[in-house]
Image 1: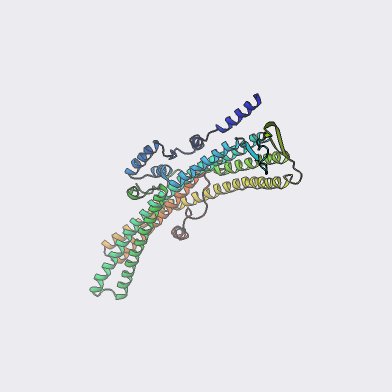
Image 2: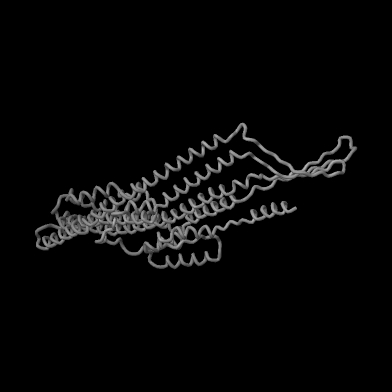
Length: 469
């Protein structure tokens, strides 16, 4: 009786294990502490969700800064909220790993064919007895997998924060390009109107009038393209914020600031990136989980399948009871294939740890080079190109006032100044995008080194051309 009560208590305790997703989310907050000041919340339908939405509305009511945009995105982006559910899955699997298998109950009845004699009854219960020895290893595997899920969720937060900051920079830059292109249209229109008047007076041939008209029409087309791009950049930001309807009418504050005089210290970026990398940490936890799974596989293949239980049988009106044991010996399948598969998976995971660390180190070097190059380009515009273009325009104005140059020379100087300003906007966007990637790398995020965060070849070519001149 004592043994039966002990077994019942063990089964009861195992069944009382609870899944607590909020505790798992607290682990994510702990992982992010010290990496970012952004506030993270998990919308689970609780009363606190209303307070989060009120905070989002408060931030959207003012002109949107980069920091406010990041905070809104982390609180409101539904794809990020969906990622949080990975925590619930991983924690549930951790709890499941600590549970004993359910006992198997059996029942049987035997009826005589001729209707004579008594009905025989059989009752039995069996439990995987050796399963209890695998529970600690199962829990260790699930714990490592849970920690890897925690790290990946934290990395998803940093990913969204960095992407939102870059999207904000690009929205600001696109708006700045529109303003500069509007000036270009005004200059082109003035040139066309001047040519029209001169043509009416018979002072210029028709081909010059047509050329000025073509420049004006092209400037208007370029303005339409710039406005379309600004709209797309704004929508890219809105998607990351997770807003629509009235909330999507937010106002982007300010303009892109100039490149600061003080550079970021990049001397130790590579080692900082590897030490902080959540991707490397997740890969290590994956490898540790597979290593523990190998130990679990070895245990499971070494031990036989052993079921221990009891059976009661009633025959001819009498009950008989006794123990029952079932054992499957590893004679044909000794688990060698399963062990080999897990060993291969372990080597693969270990190689991925190394490869991820190599990628992070490379990213640190690439981003350091990218930031330094873009800082030089933007500073060249700030210190040399823009002042030169402004001085050329100013001197051309003086020459025009002294009747030493014509209206077209003045308009060309103004157009060149506007074009340099447009390229400066590209340079600023490139610099602040690269800077955001560097700061995110230090926080533990692995940035993308290809695609949208790189300057377009057209912008790069234009910038290099200005430097050459």
